[in-house]
Amino acid sequence: MDEFVVSGAFIVTNSGKNIADGAVAIKSGRIADVGERESVLREWRGAEVIEVPGRVLMPGLINCHYHTGLTFLRGVAAASDFEAWMDDYVAPLEASLDEEASYAAALLSCWEMVRSGTTCFADMHLNVEAVARAVEEVGIRGYLSQTIADSYHFKGMDTLKVNELFVRRWRRKRGLVHPMFGPCAIRLTSKRLMLESAALANEYDSGIHTHLSENLNDVEYSLRNYGKRPTHFLGECGLLGNRTIAAHGVWLDDSERALLSRTGTTVVHNPTSNAFLRSGTARVRRLLDENVNVALGTDTAACNGNANTFAEMKQAFLSSMIQDSRETVQPSEVFRMATLGGAKALGLDAGRIERGAQADMVVLRPEPFMLPLEDRLWPFENEIVLSATPSNVETVIVAGRIVLRDGRLMTTDESAIIKRFSVSAQALLAKLK
Ligand SMILES: [Zn+2]
Image 1 (spheres, protein in one colour):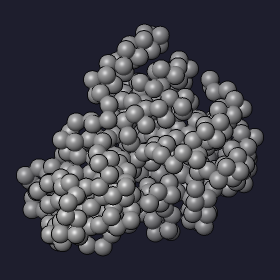
Image 2: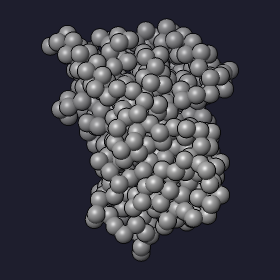
Image 3: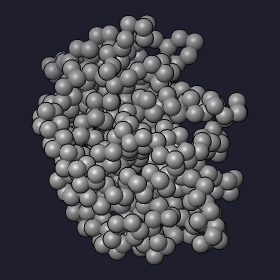
């Protein structure tokens, strides 16, 4: 279906006014028209029409920081801190992951994200080709990188080579898979690997996905080993810029925020993970006020429990409210972080329902208590952030293709995904006992 109209919804456009009784025409993967229902239907007479009366049509959510492979660790209890979590659970699991397990975890993750209204995600994983296969099969957009690191089980230069091959293979395909480089984190990735990652990203004109100042140990390590704070170290390595997404950014000083703003680097806020791993509370208000682009990420299910961007939006609002009142981030701002902020971070023309943008959209079936469908004294986006859950997600469209319809995955077999994951999980967890 190359051309169709979604009609009769309350449209949250993220671009000017919301539309009470609207319709959107989709053609060749893009939004071809948006406006009042009657005028769009008149203009697109003859096109197939999907009627969604009483529903909400909104831009697809973008999850800008995830690790598909760690989905096997969902339900791991909160460890005492990041180190214990990494040493006791993450490192042993990752050392056991083969291509098949990574593929099974990525399929499950992609399916979970689509069901949660997420149309695009950024991932860092050690078997990146397996993740790419899953992305294509499920039909979500994936900005994928290999974990480049030389500590624990990571194989240093080999990880960079795998990432380079991946970028070379996928960069010209212009499909759902977008390759990036993934120099992992200051304490897991040597300066040499950081520098070489930056050089290759530059050579291939590719994006970069990294971690930044997730916890205080990162800052102490950077000061001790490099004589500067982590953001300045990344800058010295050539890793900052408007193609870079830096996850967490919990411990930043004024000079670091200024540098992130000046270089156009995106900070990905992961409030659930930051609480789960006792990392700290990111000061997002300051980032926004200093014109740093902020996107939103769930981080892995191993430090979240879910890949649910709705819950993450609410958590982002609440984590601002437990700080000083000057740190408040409004729900509507959080909504923009999870849509426009993510799109800008990845260089994707999406995050809004506007003519010409990518047709990445979600139809919500609102609960009766979410009515009426209109902006009131507050924007309707607030209600999505505070009240919506994945159970409201009815239909998901990615690149103009219907991936989920009436809650059912249209692209591949859901029961096969679950079975495959459960077989891998049993084998892996038996090994770890
Ligand atoms: Zn991470």
